[in-house]
Image (tube, rainbow, N blue to C red; front, side, top):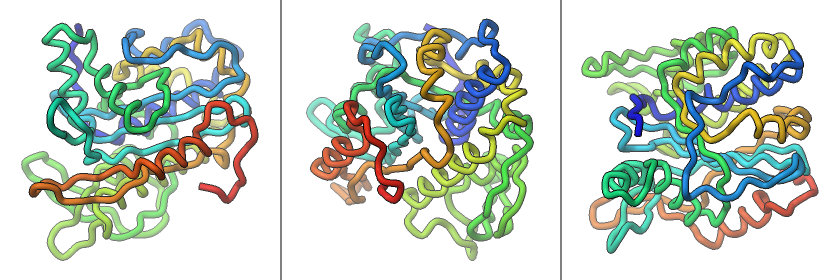
Length: 325
């Protein structure tokens, strides 16, 4: 098994999803596909579900952003592509979500680390298998693909795309000399290059006297989702798609996935009809709670089932109302 250096949790996922979508558009524009390879290798997982055949289907992709050492997947997103309605629905799973593990409980962001232990025991071939299993248990949804992403190429990707216009909600000021991390983003609409985009998505809390997200990590998830929508809205355009193959070349150095060119061909028709206004963001229903001195996010099973049965239903062939979330 190969070992990969995986760093920041969220930013690489942004680049991966954006570039995967942009590459698809670029392939359509260039009418060429033979040179594209998704990820450094195609990795198969035991826990993944059978891939639906044909372009008219619903497929779910689990995006994982893992910290250095590969023991925490602090950003977890389940992306559902509905080939019937041409919609993309993204379900964010808070990293503190409580899951059963053995006779006890853990946070879901530890699942990939537990998976690494299972690999050493010979129970799995890949650490992502355990994470896939736990997300399936939480949501009740099948998972057909996974994407685990490295952070290193994110800044170059954003710069290659020409930056992103985005409104910074408040003065984001944070300094961490240990990590050599220094963030100083003024509030208001501005053009973010790769470095500034990195700072925005990495921001967690402010220095003393400066603001942070009022709702903590949940607020950060909302901000990250807004940034993702801005990327998709601004970069799924012909003037950016022409360079999509070159941009994707950067991403392939830092991606592990089972998504192949064959899959791209299968999904090319419906994905080409998708647009930014059909990208909807959702969060796993639930609420924070302290249990035995540990802060968890407790999933609401009934509300999750309702969300899955309406928004993420694999048999849904009618678009949702534009105002529904």
